[in-house]
Image (cartoon, rainbow, N blue to C red; front, side):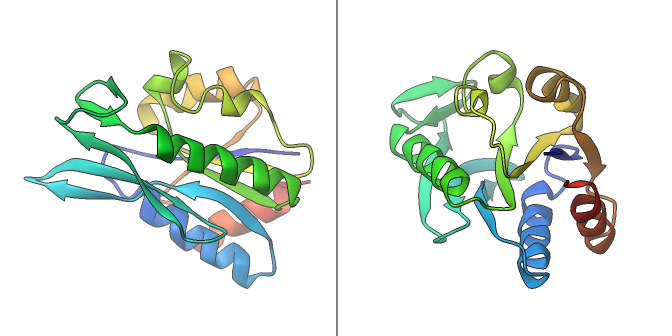
Length: 171
């Protein structure tokens, strides 16, 4: 299976792009799974992240800025329940043979073997992954998880063109 990395700069709309791309793939008859991580902004900065599953739209608080959670990374407190939701959705998507599995967002934490790193050690055989990450991390993420073989797609590419690339290069 070929895998894909959707990339853009910080706060540029990667998650919104992921939702639109997911909807387009579903409308074209593909089965999707995984999760996206919408958030809330406060004073122009991301304050909160959620895990939102694609299969059921279940939404779980993943991280909140300047709080106490189950553990911290940077200025965010993270919550185990959301990670469990993300892991369950990922493994269920693999078991159900989703054509495409979204994972939002990968980056610095995964590169230091945290966050979703352990989850990504189990690669789906019959599904293509679509990882979302900041442009700053795309090359390192591609090397670490895909041996530089993932197709990188910038979110400035039209949704239709991205869907066509993903569909045509999937197999």
